[in-house]
Image (cartoon, rainbow, N blue to C red; front, side, top):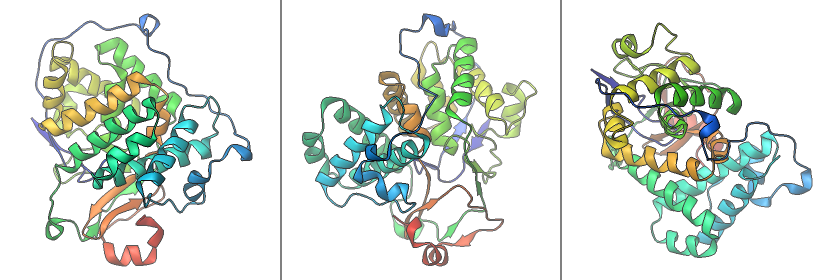
Length: 323
């Protein structure tokens, strides 16, 4: 059984996915998990705490870094906010989006990476290496020629994701019941639909936050709603358990999506959250970027098109959406 993902997502990937049966593994109770709990409560930060590097995203006009030094400054500022106890929702959203743009730009410019890493501390170095590597893996699954890239934006709706608290509760439940580390479920949810932001059916009929086609959903959905975040996360847990996640994570992820680049990217993002669960909050702020012939176009929450839209006309009307 195969299913097809939406053409391009938060990490700009176009992927084909399959599922099959397999053995199950033991679940782990969250109380026995030595990893720190992911944060979900966020309170407001004082205006004096706003780093200059995050101001463009806070103003709704996010910008890519233009030098390696600026990229390092951006990553450092964003990570200070993401790792803070009480950054405030708006500041956290700006930090996540700004960090995402830094990752995308560094991934495009290999010559920058050594310089950026030299300017960062050890924790931020590990974070950037992992995310740049994941970005490159996912980008490798796209056409490389501009003539093969989209000249239209999709007929999608972009909606706010469920809250960190709600999503984490579902991830933890799936981990407890099916033995699938919650960070892997979160990474899949992020790459598939930007944590459920994307509402639209793929060309092969894949649906919902974790992208199932109905025939696969009939096997793993347990009678739930394919568009419901909780139900779809549990279904993904069932699918991964059936495909032997406890025995061989890589093989199970490959059965979720038949691409080793996908497997490597999911693993890199999951391990970033295992090292620091607060990264879930930052990743939740990563936005939907759609790869086109003119570049990666930001589709913000509120984007809603019933028919494909010519990308050049859209960008002319919304230049801030081509950072």
